[in-house]
Amino acid sequence: MKFFIPETMSETLAEQIHATIREFLDRGVGAVVSPDRIFRLEYAHEGKYYRAEVGKPHPYDRGAVVAIFFEPLRKVYHICTPNRGMGHTMSLLVGAYEVHSREDFEPASSN
Image (cartoon, rainbow, N blue to C red; front, side, top):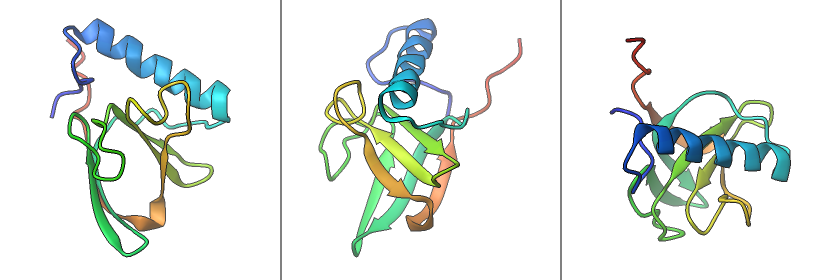
């Protein structure tokens, strides 16, 4: 899957939004996230199965997933929706140990 941010009309805008969310996580909550671009996570939390996929509503939050980041130091994923992790509240947190599968976006082409 090619990298995108939901409801953006250009690759440039998608890059800007991704960088802004990343900056909020860094400055706002002290999360140093990896450069990975994650498309989908499948995980279990408190006995329930979840699938977080960019562009689709998250079953817990019901907002569309805008971006997913991984914070290696704390071994936690940050799932960002319009309601969570977008500059005003904490992201949805998922421990790496809860994740059953992960799919990243395709690497950017170097054309």
